Length: 341
Image (cartoon, rainbow, N blue to C red; front, side, top):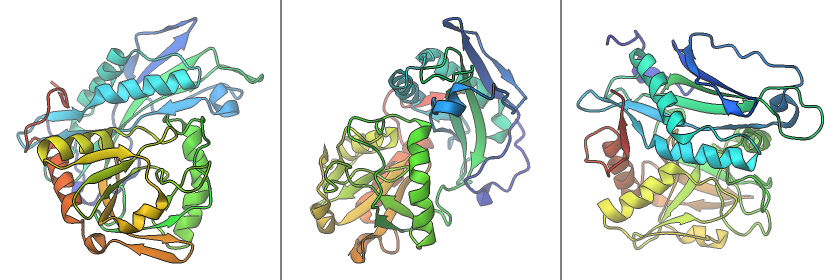
């Protein structure tokens, strides 16, 4: 298929309307079959549950062109499972996981001309999401919902591509203990907007959120998980019930152990430990891994010499291996790469 005439290498991380998206509606206790549509507009009641009480969940994932020219999606089954968990937490009907994968595949196939070519540095970002559509004025779950998937080609999440970031320790809390920090709900991201806007205004790229209960343990940023490397080469990532279970982080930890032979551990990380780490990165679907050069805690700087100009050596190996798997240069574990026929 002939690709769209786009300057792929200079794409930013922003929305660009593509040809088709998938829509399915839930009513009277059941999901309909759903279908592709060219209409990118959503029409809902002014009192819709999503507008009144933020009843919405979403996912983020990518499709790629591999080295041998195949179009693939990375681990969509895990996104389906995570969205199901998010829906249950917000008392929303679960969109069947196998149908989730089918819908995503339909959207990629219908927008094949928008999948960036191999080597361009761009990808096709996929956004499955669900929201309450019927009128809800009392505080309760909606009765009707819409599930949608759209696609948009994107470049790097952080401007300038892979470069070391400067992060501040935030005074704001991202999620409450026993709250919704572990699911991908729109309300969590709304909570982080003021913090990220003020961080940018002060010259920082992102916020580091500490645990809300004690403000002593590392959690995550507004949109990515942390990954640290110790001075003896161990990969360590925070463990908490109030952070999002990142599919990218899970994949990187597997890569560290099974591909690179590194010791890898998920555990609670005290903020006091951060100054002793050799490398720091942010990981997630959008950026894969972005190196962190500095963390600023109310004027006190923690610098990671290995990441001040480029990625540290261990972070670089993790990045190269995972992107190599995604792009077909390295053999993937069984089930990681979903080929769009």
